[in-house]
Figure 1 (cartoon, rainbow over the protein chains, first blue to last red):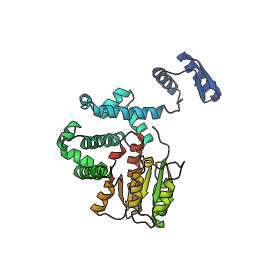
Figure 2 (cartoon, chains in turn green, brown):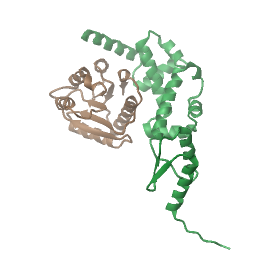
Figure 3 (cartoon, rainbow over the protein chains, first blue to last red):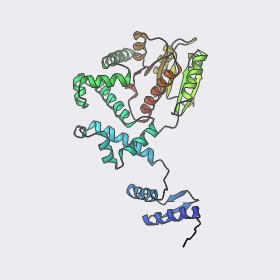
Figure 4 (cartoon, each protein chain N blue to C red):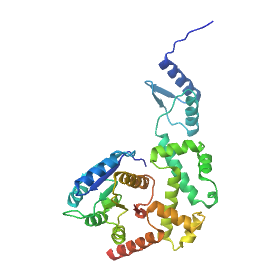
Length: 186
Length: 148
């Protein structure tokens, strides 16, 4: 026996959406086919649950949550670099564990939104930390390399030069001259 | 903080160089809005206008009539209203002394005019990527030095 079916896709999608929203137990209202207004705010856990459940049907939530996640990635990287105890983790494991998404998802999202890879951003951040330390402390480059968890001074110098086009010593010289100029102008 | 468009300004008296720069920027993935000026005075008159959308980054040729790039750089750095603007020197000079002097005077980027279009595109792309991070990630602009 064969049976034939006909879909009203619009109706199907609307029904799935309503069913999933009902499950959350949060008051809502649908405006048109693609907009849902949630009364009040949705806690992140519920939001993720909804996103996951709708995902099964190929329905995606479009919004700025993605950009929000990019900010959280950046914050986590900053935190990680500032915290001595977590520096031994691999960045991919650390981010995936902390943010609860697969690293490949995070990394694609990040590149899409910022035009840079997570790896490049980490390097940029580390070099920026090195610059801050050079400007604000009297630490030697060896000490700075150690603090930022580089395997050697050469490794830090190499990344520094690659990221800024300048050697750490050239950078330091420019910095000192700038400060001197600044003092003279005051 | 999120960015939609990177606002870019270029001051260069050479028309060909302006056109090449414009083409190089249009092909990039990063969304940009570019304004062009043909000398330093025109640029500085624009930057001090009230109610303009300030550029994220200004590219300055060093040798320009009326007001040269170094003068523009110094004026920009003296103006507190412009302290969130990155300054990129875009020049053919590759003397170490010139380069260092522009950094000491407050430039963020020194970009040597590349001799072919592909290289120009790659260089501009790198500058914009890093600049984007500085404007969207709470990085300290005072520390931003890049030489290409």
